[in-house]
Length: 55
Image (cartoon, rainbow, N blue to C red):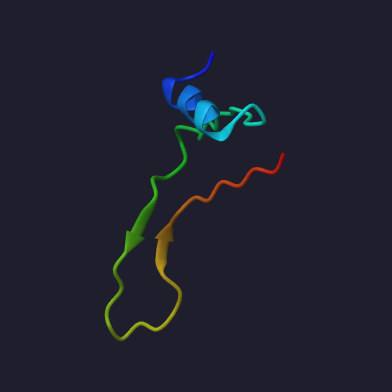
């Protein structure tokens, strides 16, 4: 079954669009970004997710 948002994207992107879904496990931590003290010069602290798809 397709979602309304998927149908809208297919209409706007043309017949070669391929709908898909991603399920994140319920035990996965939420995406958060902590604001470190100004003295901290390292990489950002927190958890984030990035999804990429190649077809």
